[in-house]
Length: 237
Image (tube, rainbow, N blue to C red; front, side, top):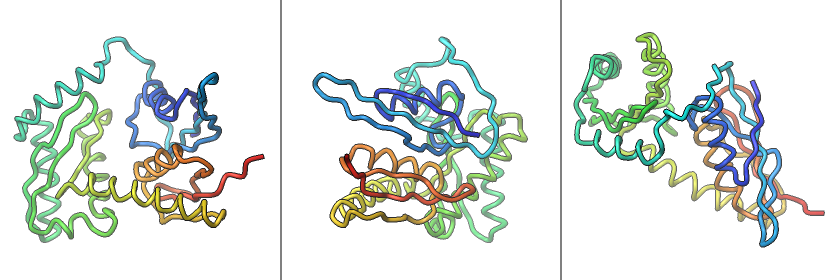
């Protein structure tokens, strides 16, 4: 399924997509169709396409939805309670710990954060490097299984995020550095560079970072969840 959204900036367009589709920002891939930078007498304009592998139930915006500030306060309050607060959280913790044990390793799982439609868990293990895997693929697989299990428990509207050793944050910082490095190389050579296959969240981070760099554009290529991002020189007429 492909949806189109517009905004003055990519962030505004992505926010509209999440509000109208009722999904999290890291659950879909974004392709920038058109971008016009704002100036002194001209507003910026960005049109994006949202690619999703499966149809989603579209949710209209609701005034009862928590504001960002309210979500931040709730998240900060929940950080003081890493222990499970209900049966759903206890079931997820037990599920993840059992999978780790069946893999032949040990790990303790605790709640890292809570949001209205998202919950994060932290895995503490002496085998964290193995559980994370190359480019985080083992952690992504474990996270996918946990989300499927959450759906079977009747909570398919909640996104589950798994992390270990702050891998997600370190990965995000590394991708931003990669985006700038590749963009500089593309501008120097005026050619294109195809990056390694990435999950939707990583691809969106590359798209967003390079969107703020002049004379360089990006597009996703391939099929399935792990697509590749091509960074290419923008020829101005």
